[in-house]
Image 1 (tube, rainbow, N blue to C red):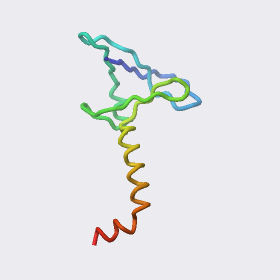
Image 2 (image 1 turned 180 degrees about the vertical axis):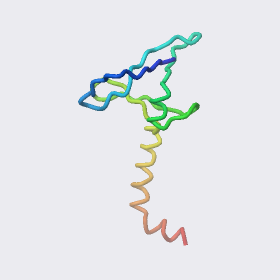
Image 3 (image 1 turned 90 degrees about the horizontal axis):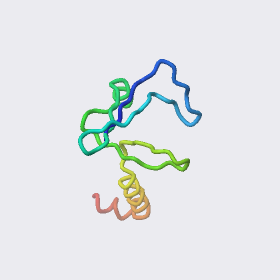
Image 4 (image 1 turned 90 degrees about the vertical axis):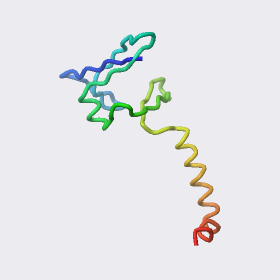
Length: 94
């Protein structure tokens, strides 16, 4: 999946977030790809080979994020466990 993004001169900001470019899907072999412009890659601090996770938003959109939602869920469970067993973990750390 290839997505072409071109930054236009006049972009109307979305009330839910700032629009930073226009994205188009391109055919790459048997797949469809996403291409991000250099400006967007720089602005989002991305590099070639970075992994982005696509999640669905409540309003039906798609959000791309470098944070793995499954990992974040696992970290929340770990934080709860560390809070509950704080004293035992402190003793084990000695």
